[in-house]
Each structure stands twice: as C-alpha cells, then as structure tokens.
Image (cartoon, rainbow, N blue to C red; front, side, top):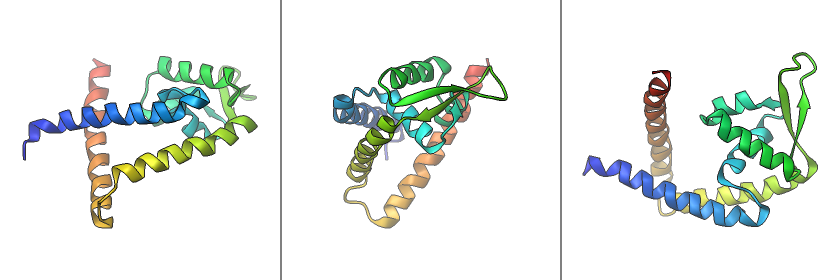
Amino acid sequence: MDIGRISGYIAMIERDYNYFVSKKAKEYNFKKHDIRVLKVINANDGISQNEICTIIKEDKITVSKAVKNLVSEGYVKRVKDLEDGRVTRLFMTEEGLFYRQKILMIFEEVNEIFLRNFSDEERAMITMLLKKMSDNIHVEASKLKEE
C-alpha cells in the first residue's frame, strides 16, 4: 500500500464531498460551514458560538460567519444568556427546524454513497479508523495553533 497517497485520497474525498453537499444544499442558501453549525445547534439547543468552535474544531471567524448567515436567513435566533450577558445562546427557529430535515437527508445520502459496497464489518472499521485519523491530526494541528 502506498501510504503517501492517504493525504491525496483524503483531499479528493474532501473536494468531492464539499462539492456534493454544496450543490445539494444550494437551493436552501446554505454554505458548507452553515450546515455544520446548524447541525450542532440542532443537537445542542442554546449552545454558544465558542462551544460550537470546540465541537466542530473550527475557528471563531468561520463559526461567526456561519451563525450570521443562519440568523439572516431566519434559521437560527440569538438570545442573550440571562446569567452571563457576555454570552449569546443560539436556538433553532421553526424555519430552521423545517430545513434541518432536508439537510439531514443530504448527509444520510452522502453517508450511504461513502459506504456503498462495504460490509457492516468494513463500515465499522472505516468509522473507527477515520475517527483515529481525525484525532491524530487534530492533536498535531492544535499544537501548531499554540506556537
């Protein structure tokens, strides 16, 4: 196995994945980061932007832009935290909940495409290995951010 090709395959997968999801979500005026942020808000009603950054391992500027777009589209609303006025909590709107289902269907479709022609055992192995790879690169990237 040509171990040097792993980064090349990941880059190709990322490119095609981003294209696929962007094309499918375009009619809802979502950008790729909007979708990731929306998924986190949906799963964690009342979450703060800083907490989103931690969960999706993205910088504050990227998350802020995504939240701004989601708010302007009417999918998410901002509410000041009652205990700490410096914190803004994010909640799904009715419209956001409606479009959430459409976005989740896109992710289900792309996951089925990724795992097409794999056995259940291979699917479990892929998931475990990808998580391990993600954790490895995240640790190293975090070290670089600290420098």
